[in-house]
Amino acid sequence: MRYLTDRKRAQGLGSGGSGTQQHWQMMVRSIIMVVLVPLFVFTFGMGLGGTYEEVLAYFARPFPAIVMGLALVVGIYHLMCEAQEAIEDYVHGTKGKLTLVAVKAFAFTLIAASLFALVKLAL
Image (tube, rainbow, N blue to C red; front, top):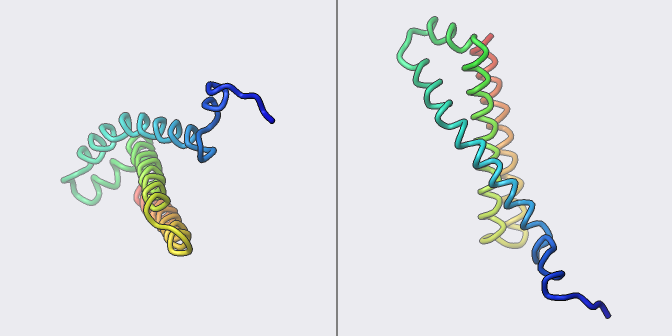
């Protein structure tokens, strides 16, 4: 028999065993997105409306390429994790597992394709 107080039982990771860790990861990603989204909008806006050569020259510079890459990776990863939370809450059984695999595969494919396009544009 274990003699634990209510406080000791409540100090774990939550009933699911990983709720606190997922919450903090979501908060960190959200804070990063608060910084990256305005930088992304500014960077994308500065490259918008130019000729093809001007856009290539603009994204060949390191700062716009890095901001775009970070915003794409963190944004898509954040979206994937949020979709995973919703799927875990509302879709159960084999359908849920297959949906999780499909969402993760789609997200990582989207990340790879967007980074490939950015590298192709920047080089």
